[in-house]
Image (tube, rainbow, N blue to C red; front, side):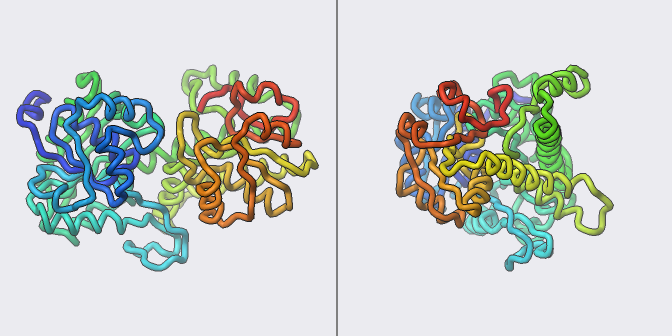
Length: 426
């Protein structure tokens, strides 16, 4: 189907999940179709209905405030799904560490994604709109769509992985690097439906003709997602280990990285050292891919990527401890500029190690109040640290300030700053 054919009829599309992935997808599709978003969080739903973004993303905030999208939100599953042509599922799939009960794919010994939120939505879709085509945007293990198609064999299931950056999710939907849609081998007749959904996404992009599009088997689509993120994690791990070597031997990291990246095959991007890769995607996706290899597939690199990140975090903590100070200031908990997300932040892991050594931590994080900060510490299982959101007082009170990403407002404390950031970019 052509782009024009895909967009001739306005569709009713439901989107389950109002996180980065779901809300960006809802805003994208609501340019041309009628979209109703569903979430169990009443707070998020009310913000979207009021034209406000529930998290930091400038383009989503602008799109919602503009009021031109045909988009609403609800906590009522029946209201969201009844009569939908498509249901897009973008609910969380956190990684379950090895040994936890409740694995739905037989890999509890190595860990796996928790896909229970997806199955809850699928059950509601089966109840309220069994004729709809369901598209999985949540990140899932390789083979999941095939597996769940057997469990919900009356539903038309597709998978379309997302390739987004936190804080720039709508921008990356409007200007996608590629569009991938997969269909189960059990349902070859869904190939045309997969192509139709790819056409819908392409038609909503800023420059549709420039967007590469692939329709593949579902497991191939899932593999594209996990291997893409694992490659990015591997690249981060490579440059942070380069930086570790340079730091310990007194070499100039920026000069080495620049020289390495002058090779056009390597290129000058995704090479800025940090305290370790973090955020919602790379840690869990790299663990999931390592779990999928298991003992059956010969490998060393995939599992080493996960191990390399843990080694880096330990090294960073040891370097900070060697300063022999008592009060360490932590400037920001987020992994990326323009983000308010602390999930799987390497900074939090460094904090845990410093607290274990008895250091006092003072944290500057303007996105949190005292109650939210205490809840975050409890959630992460950490001993008490102190929040100080007056930047001047924060600087004055700290013997050493650590920052995963440098910032101009730290220029006046450069003599007390520990960071491995060399370019000031994510």
